[in-house]
Amino acid sequence: MWPRVDGMRAMELGTPDGLRARLNALVLAGRKTATTGLLAEYAEEAEGLEYVGERLALLDDDGRPVATLEITGVRRTTFGGITWEHALAEGEGDATLEEWREGHRRFWERAGTPVDDGTPVVCLAFRVVETPAP
Image (cartoon, rainbow, N blue to C red; front, side):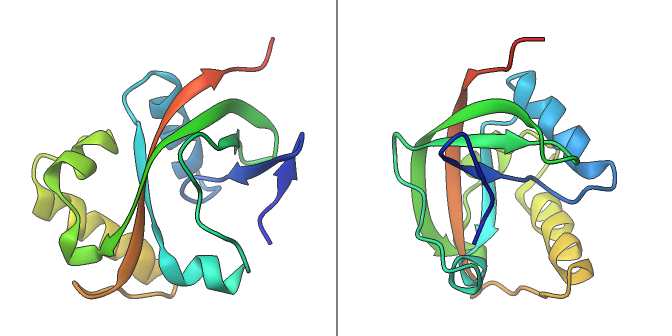
């Protein structure tokens, strides 16, 4: 089960090795408005898919909330079915869809879950609705 914060499910982007901080900074700057997850992770964690309108707590490396996100889109597809529009909305600076795919393949392979074009994924779109007071 994924962590809960203030009654919301939590979202932890990337890994806590500098990548999460970089991705969170992109979210807070408004450049990252989408992310992709493996459908298998939902089953492993006994979690349902997010839904439009759901609010999630975006967490930092220490499990502290850095923003509240509102889900604006949820789409199940395969890794090979991801569109350039979605990859671009991930805001990570990829110049092409193939560059985005290669980076994500490397990420999941390092995490122990190699992906191919048929791997089921969940594409989420979101917006920042609140950031904690300093």
